[in-house]
Image: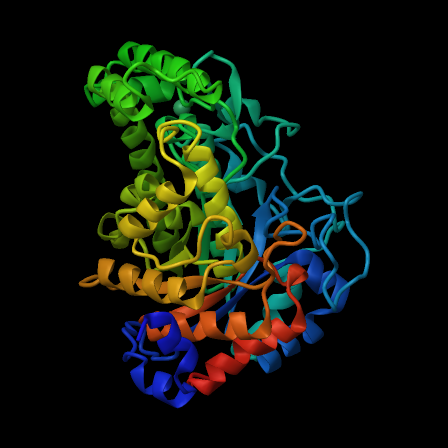
Length: 490
Ligand SMILES: [Zn+2]
């Protein structure tokens, strides 16, 4: 019997019996049932009503409040073009959403950065933590400040923090090796840790290095040659590691020619895959540059971790791991869980099963237009299913079926095994109504229930309902809460 049928056909009681004992190290063996929520939901619906729904419908015990972002994935109401859910203001916020920090900002923590003006203007002076913390604490709910590595370019003082493209132009992304950005990150976590009675911090960076960006090895829309970072901090750091920035630059120019030709279907004499390897062999600096970027991200994790712990050791610090980890074997290789664990109290690893179908199809399209341009799409997908260890439907089907709960089970089990011997808790990110294209698969109560059951059956220490309450349907929150209760965890 295959795993999917096992999960779908097994009684909740049997699954409950199979849920492994918790690895609790904080004195509590309660599993985390978290939900991501943005400030606008508390304003639109009222703090007490939102928390009632979370507790009663979804059995939530931990709030991951989006305290800072310029992205629409975790803040603001439903994104335009998607149907509004069955709660909250029945109106899009296209005209008012701007993003930024949804708490008060204490300037003393931002003395060492040029980026000082980032209070979100969308909701006036509303301070989300001030508004919801008293009630959350009274109810015994934990609160984690959740923020991400997403900015906009029209902000005073941000240009100094931006990455540099191969061309020398500024990029829209910020550089982890730039002290101005590092100090800003440390300032904001110190501000929240000192100024509010919170329980922890979660940060997420949905990016990768220049080598994988150039090959289009992600499920995002192809950006076309986003090659960073060649700022003075990064080139100095490269030299200190024995990497010659000029050789890296020359390698990326060769790679750029290769990718441009591939996109025009100008097949090299020896084919795409062989030719790419020839470039890598000639310019190993390409991989060294990729790892420089990845190590810089890990150093940023470590710096944030140490800062928060220096303020209050009991605060829990963890990271949101990008969905690309589910699609790209290259990005997955960079997510070395044992290497990240020493600076991770918990990891939210994204396992959004419904939107994974559409996203995997896009990933295959992207990578199938560069290094694997000789491989037909279905064969390329089959290869990925083999190396990533999934059993999912065909390329033509997955946008319309999504991925199954079995994917959540396999990914949870794999990540849990990867974290064995560490004290890091694993919180799979569960897909609740993450937008997909019209006509593509949508979440249903059974799909949400099965995903939650699969996560716990795979050995999760909790689940994190994602991405934001303002896009979730109430029936799906109830299905998540129902699964938690079936398992006897609430
Ligand atoms: Zn840089």
